Amino acid sequence: MKNQELPKIAYIGWTEPSNVSGATLVLMRHLFGDNRWNVFVVTDKTFKGIGEENKWFSIKRSWLHKRLSRTRFRRIIAQYEMLLEPYLITLKLIKLVESFEPDIIVTIPDNTLSWVAQLIAKKLNIPLVSNFQDWWPRGQFYTPCEAPYLLTRKILENRFRQIYKDSKIAFCTSEGFRDFLGKHNCNPILYPCPGEKPSKRPPINYIQTNEPIRLIYAGTTVRYYGQKILSLARLIANRQDITFHIYGGKPDWSKEDIKWAEDAGIYQGFVKHEVVKQHIANAHIGLVVMTSAPELEIMMRTSFTTKFLEYTQLAKPVIVWGPTYCEPVRIVKQTMAGLAITQEDPDAVISSLSNFRNNETLQSFSDNSWKAANTIFDAKHIQDVFSSNIDQLISTKNLRLEA
Image (cartoon, rainbow, N blue to C red):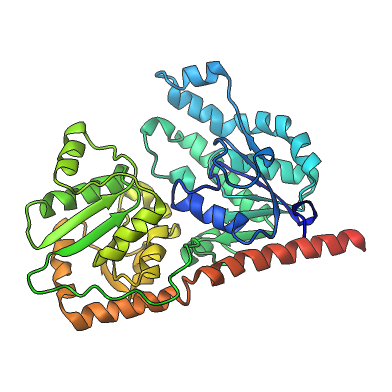
């Protein structure tokens, strides 16, 4: 079937389909992995070779907007972007989206562009599909100037709930998210879609008697997560029985801390997804970090980290270091794919590592991790949850129009 004849999806959101991060990879796999839809992308990011360039619209901002965003007025500009700009963007985009004639509009709820998706879907009477991945009104922002004021946050949270209510399908990245948002006619659990797992189970890296335990962290390295992994790195740095490698974007640590972590061989920088997978394969244990910061409690109860799934695709035991109420802690206990460390003290993580020197224990965690990769975290199963619900909605919509 020619691309022009495929069902049409207009995606509108600040998370762009690309290989830049775990979230963008997930979106890329969902929208383009099966080549089953004709996709038009609206985002504030530039085209990076995913999809067709003539079906990728990058939202441009004025030179004054960009200039003010680099001044002390940045936080005020951010409030404008969250509260008012979506209405102006909607006016500019509505005819463009309408001309594409999408069957549905898809968005990942965020603090800006997802409201554009909701407004356009309502104006054009096109079914809206949302994929709730993070509770961004109370998110973990790279810098404080990006965070909403209290009144802004309240408005954004009301918008998130309106998007949930208006969506024909409201995918939820965890059971905790679905419980938090409440009743809905169609709100399937949709874990972050990982890459395809190997056709054969990867071998277990047993830890030899005098061999250091290789612990790896691949993920967010800023704010609360960044401070936790830095505290752990400080304790591990001078040990001979543990090596710790961190992969991710540049941390928001001091220049001295970054240089120290680089010189110590702990912070390895940002590398491509396929390269990270190779490093995960060589490690003994994968680390997942969540935070107990009170202001992020809702986010921890609802969000789910992509790296948990990526570790299981390579049959790695997982350590989840986070509060008892976070979703990854619940899942690691449920699957028995590793250990949950719910104390904030990084010494608790280090103490737990000795468990993995027992071959039977390590094999049990590895077996359960691989089992999770083939059941709840299976990429084909996760993609089928997404595509089957989308296809059914489009089919129902078209049948109704033909009737």
